[in-house]
Length: 102
Image (tube, rainbow, N blue to C red; front, side):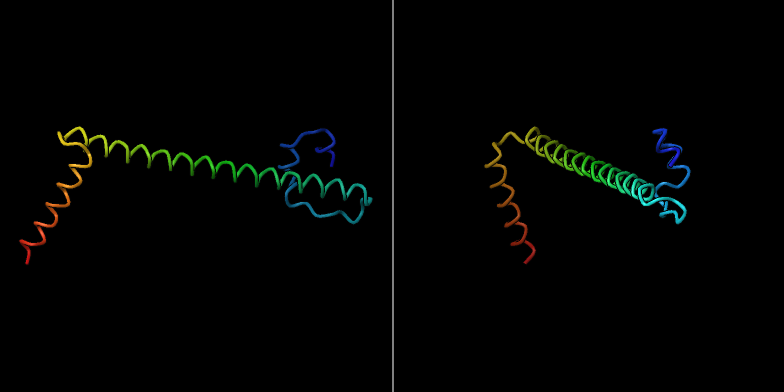
């Protein structure tokens, strides 16, 4: 509690704030402040983890989207045909390949 009163969260963490249990020798008010401080810090840590997970998820999605765009751009750059015509040609080639396999 002394570290919390001094607003020294680093010291409070080092002294075991997150694992602190109510003290049988302290007053109810002191135990309530300790529990409140612990619960607030646990909520803050959980929020930070959710934020980090969201940032990682958004970065992964952006990388996937960029990779997909790069692939499409590379295909379009190598093909002189419009995208719809290139897709129709690819389907025709696939049908022809399955007919040859029979």
